[in-house]
Structure formats: C-alpha cells, structure tokens
Length: 230
Image: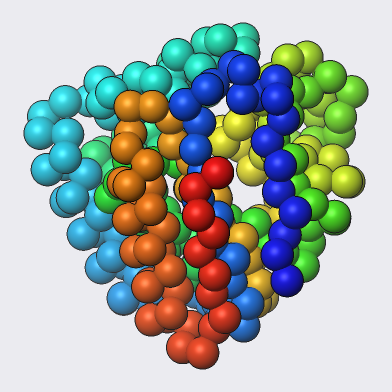
C-alpha cells in the first residue's frame, strides 16, 4: 500500500525549493520511551550542537529559509516556529527533548540531528490521501484546548496538511492534530521529512535512510519503504 500524497501547485509556487521524503512503515511496535530512544535523543542534541557550532537554530540557513516561507504565507516565524526549529530550541535548553513514545522519539531524534522538520502520522487514522495545500480558511482542525476537544480553522492562505476529514497539521509543520498522531497503539505510520533550498536533496535522503534504519532496529520485521524525494 502506498499512501496518496500530493503537493498543490499553490504550495509549489510559494516554495519552489520544497522537497519531501516519505517513509511508510507497517507492522511497527510502539510503546513507552526506552533507554535506547532516550540515548538517541541525547545523541541528536549533541549532533545538533556540533552542527550549529554556537549559533542559534534560527541562524542556520535551512531554518532561515523556513522562516522566510512562514512569513510568505502570513505566519510569524518567531512565534509559531517550524517543528525542527522548535525542537532544536528545546534540545539546546536545560529542559532538553521530551520523551513521548518510541516512534515519536525516533523521528524527533532525526529531526534534531539533521535540523529538518519531520512529522509522523498514524496511517490507520488517515482518511483517504494526504494533501499539502493553501487553506481556504473553512477547513476544520480538531485540537484540544483546556482539556476539551475544540475545532479551529486555519487562516486563509495558510499552508496545511490535510486529508479527507480535515486538517492534520497547521502552518505546514507547526502543530499536529491529535486525531492522526502516533500513540503507543500505532502499528502503521507515514513519516514526512521536509526540506527547502538550501538543504541539498541528498541530505534529506540520508535523513530518511537513517530513520528507516532506526525503525527496522526498534521494530524488527516491520515493512518499511522509503519513497524518493518529490
């Protein structure tokens, strides 16, 4: 099975240098964070610090490119950071990276180590295919506010990931909705590794291959396919 996944012409026009690698996985074993995933997160933070060499995450050229794109669709990147920048900032702080569950820990480690936005979605909760589009503003984004389910709507022109049921992630890769996130019960997933120029496409491929290797290590026997950059 291959999940239908499309990027709209409007998004391509907004960010001509956008590339994504998709990793599909079936037969995964998830569960609480382990010593192994914790070590991976600590190592990712060390790799990040070496990559930045004293710079703040937003000073990295790839993160600067994401900030420019966020500004182009009307978002304020210093307030709503892309997922990689937000994680990097957390990794370098005293608090460090959160431990969520095995699968989330794995893709967060790849995101931080390579300074690239990575998202994970539960394939069993995706309705139809996934599309990256500029929102009309009428789409539903089901989230949680003050402990209760709430429905928000993206801004008109905002870049969002969505499926047939509604928005799955707002502001491109800023906030994922709870409906499709990976839980300890998830066994099938799609991971999206997203990049912009000036990150070389080969670097995105390396990150995707590393994630696939980790998935195989932590879920022996899982069926994993890495799709070429698109």
